[in-house]
Length: 420
Image (cartoon, rainbow, N blue to C red; front, top):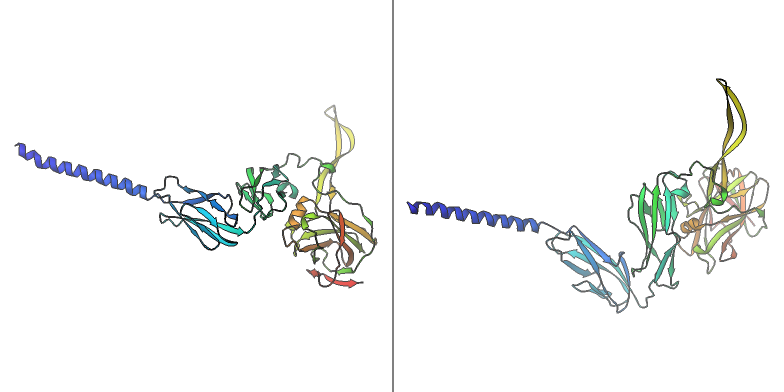
């Protein structure tokens, strides 16, 4: 009878061991399925890096998830004559040129990250970077000036090898930032805008952005002194210098001219503080400037700010059910607080001054530094107006630019002629 129990017992033990083995196998298999989902390079903080010939730099990175079954990464260089990279992520700069360093997950997930390396003979990295704003509040339902912010970055030393800036937002759904540092409100919340020195050596600055739905002062009168628009510049009599450009148009809402002209030697766009031009017209008109070769609303260099004026026009009283109730009469009107538009009165020859604020200079400095390209739009100019003595203010000096058929073009229904 005792022997009859041995075979079932042995069979039970074999099945128990088999099930346990399968469970262990499933656990190992589950762990093996934890693939790498992302590779993030932490040093440098941006995807570009400048190195001096002969210099070494170790890449720091993270793999997500942290418990990936195989978190190992392979490094490769696109041009080993320029830069080599070791199995531990140490870059060695060999000779001047560019190369791309790629980090690739070894677990077969095909996840990658990469860096653009530039090797130079002499390197002066950016030591310090600062922004014109550290904190700012933007409003979704505010004016154009309240919805956007122009960040201006300054680097030290001034003779740094690479002076370009890379902007990043911590949350693009709340506040986005363009390559030129223009911050735009997207939805209510908080975000950080970080400006990095493009040489990748670690210099950076941060601006904390708070986005609110609407300004608490949206409907309140705003005195001119609080406006961020440049102060209006009084008109002065003009002295005619150079060729006069006559602009003729049948559509005073669309037509404009484009001026594209080389900058004087030693003048940078970031140094420009204003424009001047002599203007005459048969009708009252306002002049506006735009950056670039197309008249685009978001590229306007000139600007205007208005506020609502609530004026008491009188008081009276009314008898309601035997009670005397005082009444106050009001008149609401929209007042222009400040404007950088150029104003011209009919029949007058005037020297119009158009100042440039930080926002305008940021828009202006986006294109080639050697050539100045702007659009001049005259509202209510039909049928004709003329301008000349086209000057720029930079570094405390005036520079007169010569106008002609080679650098002035008419667009959207306008035509130009020239008078010496």
